[in-house]
Amino acid sequence: MQDLLGAEHYNTTFAHSLRYIPSDQITVYPNSFLGEGRNGKVYRAKRTRPDGVLATSLRGQTVEVALKELKATGMSMKFARELDLTYTSLGGSSVGCVAFFGISTITGPDAPSRSLRASTDQARKFVLVSECANLGNIRDFLCNELPKRTFQESWILILDMLSGIANGIHTLHKHGVIHRDLHLNNILVTETVFPDQPQGLSSEISAKVADIGEGQHVADPGTFNASVEARDFHAPEILSSRTWSLASDVFAFAVAACKILDKRQELCLERPPENVLKQAGSESKPVDDGSSVLPLKLSRIITSGLKKDPGERWAIRKYIDAIEDLDGDFSSEKDQGGMLRIEWVTLDWWTAYAEAYERTPVGQDDAQTWSAVSDAT
Image (tube, rainbow, N blue to C red; front, side, top):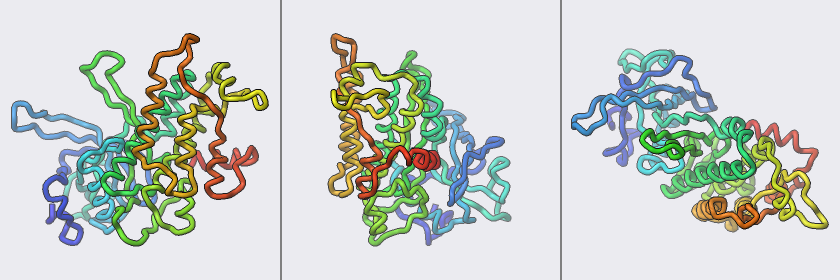
C-alpha cells in the first residue's frame, strides 16, 4: 500500500486494514454516472469478489458500489486528505454512514465507460470505493415516499431518517472528525435486504451520511476553508470566525431536520387528527391546517440544535437518545381513544433558525426564496 500511495501520502494507520481493491474486480455499469460536485464525480459500479479459500468463504459475491473519482489525476493532496478522513472515520465502524470499502484505480479519461483496468502507460487515477446508496439522496427519497404515508407513518419515517443522520454524525465525532459539509445532497438513503427473514423484517431503509471530503480532524490546529456552498447549514459561529467544531455539525443536523420537516409538511397528504390539532393549539390561537404541528420532544430537539451559542447545543449522542425515546412513544400502546400518547405542539422552525443569527424571522414573504434554497441543498 505504501508503494501504491507513495511515501508522501502514506499514513501508517493504513498498514493493516486499508484495502486496495484490484481494478479487475470492478465493472462500471452503462450510464453509470450518479452525480458531480465541485471536487469530483461519482459512478455506480459492481464489485465481484474472488472466490474465498475456505469452504465457508463467500464465492464470487457481487455487490453494488459507488466510485468517487476526484478531478485531480493521480494521488493529489486533495485525494490523500479525503482518503485520510474517510479511513479515520469509517475504516472500522461506519454506523449511520455510507460504508467505505477501500481504494482502487482507473486509467485514462474514458475509464468509467468500460471495465476498470490498471495500466502503466496511462495516467492512473485513484477512486474511493464505497457502499452504493440504492435509494438516492434523502430529498428524492422523501418526495417519492411521503405521499404514500399516513399521518402517523410519516412521523415514524421522519424519526427513522433523523436517527440515521444523527448516528452518522456520532460515528464521525467518535473518531475525531467534523463533517463540515452536511446538507441534503450528502445524506443518502439505502435499503438493505435480508432474504432469509420473514415478511416485514426482510428489509431495512436507513439514512446515511456521505461525502467526508470537506471534513476536518478535531485535533487539527487552525482553521480550514471548506469549499462548501450550502451556507444555510453553517452555524452562526462559522460566519463570524470561520472555525468549525463538533457543535457546528449539530447545528447543521438541526437545519437538515428543518428541511426534512418542510418536505413532510409539503408532501404528507393526510390531515392531522382533530385531537392532535386541539392539543397543539389553544383557545386564543387554534391550529387549523396542522402544517407546523410536531411532537413536543422533536420540537425540543430542533430548538436545542439551533441555539446560537454552540455551548448550549447538546452533544450528538443526546439527540440519538431523544429520537429513540420519541420513536418508542410512537411504538407504545395507544390510549383508550386510539391515539398515541404523544404531546403535540406547534413550532415555526425557521423563526428559531433566524433567531440564532439574530435576524428577522423567516415569514410568509420568504417562503418561495427559502424553498428554492432548500431544493438546492
